[in-house]
Length: 106
Image (cartoon, rainbow, N blue to C red; front, side, top):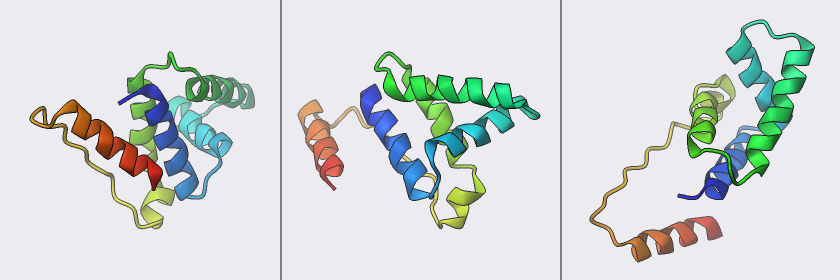
């Protein structure tokens, strides 16, 4: 999976649970710093925006954001459960790409 796909996945989930990216970043910063100042939150939000734009962002960074999102009350209150993806090397790369394309069209 490419970084653009992961960034888009995070954007979609943030939207699905009714948050804006700024509010999500604030929640993440509060969890990360436990008692952040307004400056800490503002600085983190700028960092988060960069992570969401750059194609050099590591997938692991976006995965951490996703894992945090899946723990939020907003996520649970919306009735969602954490999705699971199991990669099976027995599937051909072309099949996996076609399935990925299909899911992006919906």
